[in-house]
Length: 364
Image (cartoon, rainbow, N blue to C red; front, side, top):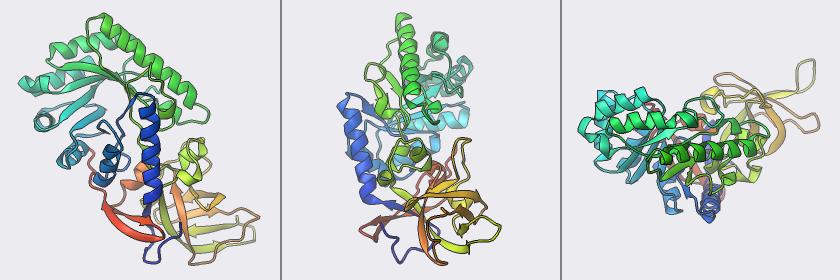
């Protein structure tokens, strides 16, 4: 794909055709296993993409915040999972009540204290909200160990909440060579927790897992649904983890070469006008840079300032000219999307639409 002439850099571009292909492939793969797909919309935050996912067969959406849930509910999404251990105060309780009055809402809980606080704040509306217990499957962020699920579930039930399932985030799959092991650990944690809950008298209908690196590895015996997010776009992390290929990258940042340095004692490099304020600054310890150039696979974004991206250039490739425009793949696409108000949608070398990042900045 060439960068359309009317694009002013830096700007996020979405290749509509690649996006559609990614959405279809994940829906068909997951559905073919008998699993439900509940994509995480925090990646894209756009109603247009949510509609495409639902049209392809998604059972509903996953979000991270009440604000995101409200945006997608207002656009007509009928089933939303807030996959986060919310600490519900009166203001959040009122918003949850309003949501539950119009759409099916489920939320995460990972402590007895959180469950009690949620039930107390919701009062007689507690039964309107489904609760999924978050299980730690090896990422060691939020979530309880499987053997502690029953005590949390009992507190939630005593608080008036409806415990219907368990979920986990296998975030340790975002490391080289870890996807398969993380998927196995995810499945073991979910099925162990669900088994203990059912033995204690709870009716568990949802076992929810699956990050982008593990979603296609999740077995139907170990989960009922998966919640990948990044798959719609791909990013430099997924490229480096070999969980996607260059032709799967649907989102890039159009950038212009503003500085060029060839020879001398300093590294051979170019500087692009796409700094951390559009690429984001994420760089895992294992990553080889802050991003990649889609059309130059051996180049690496070696440093970021707010408005500068320094790119170390391969020794055997001619340096681009000043003013040349290149496509940069962000390391972490979720962060990049949240930095802009709208994106340009491209097909056949032309801008065919502009989509608003409707849930941008809704962090609560």
